[in-house]
Amino acid sequence: MLTFYYHPLSPVARRVWIALLEKDITYQPVVVNLNGDQHKPGFLKLNPFHRVPVLVDDGFSIVESLAILDYLEKKFPTPSLLPDCPKALATMRMAQLVTVNEITTKFGSLTMKEWNPESFEKTIQHIDSALKFLEKQLGQSLYFGGDALTLGDVVVGTTLSLSCRLGVSLEKFPVLKGWFHRVTERKSWQTTEPSHADFETWKRWVSLMVKRSHKRALK
Image 1 (spheres, rainbow, N blue to C red):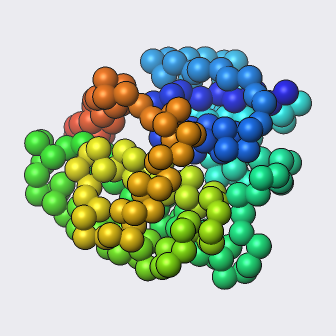
Image 2: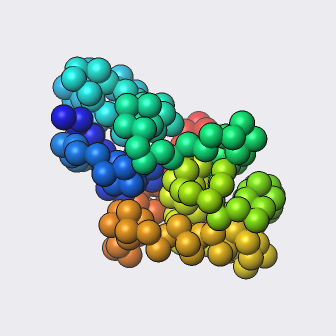
Image 3: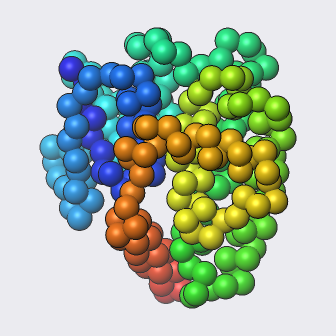
């Protein structure tokens, strides 16, 4: 059986969690408390970078969510979360990577609206350019890569779920807004969606990390 090491407030781990649910894969969940468990020797043997998620399959440890998603797709190909068409596959990959590189990396800035409003507005402008790109890639398709859910939707959807709660608006992107509603109505999203209290806890974590990083940079 697969063992899935995660924390329910980790947006990166949530990508894998949703894929496991969408593919109806049996797994053993292990919650890693991020108040120190990620630095314990046992966990560091699985991931020396002390981050979740980690997937272990018969002694084989996989780190990095995108690598885990690819592994699950190859080992459990049904139902498929990858499009067959080369162009559709490229569209899906672009959606994944643009989201990871241009939106997920801005979570810290999004939590600092009251502390640094100027930086927040610049971040919103940056994210809007990424959203414009994503809407173009979506086009008239129901999902990123075609008419069925893909790994691109999993990555984009889990990221935007938090981004919108942090102040990002989809009002200027009606196609993307419709897609977002369609995706987040799925059972896997509803099951894994953080409560308001959990979201506020995660937001405080991120804000605290950003402030600590900023203080170190000033020294």
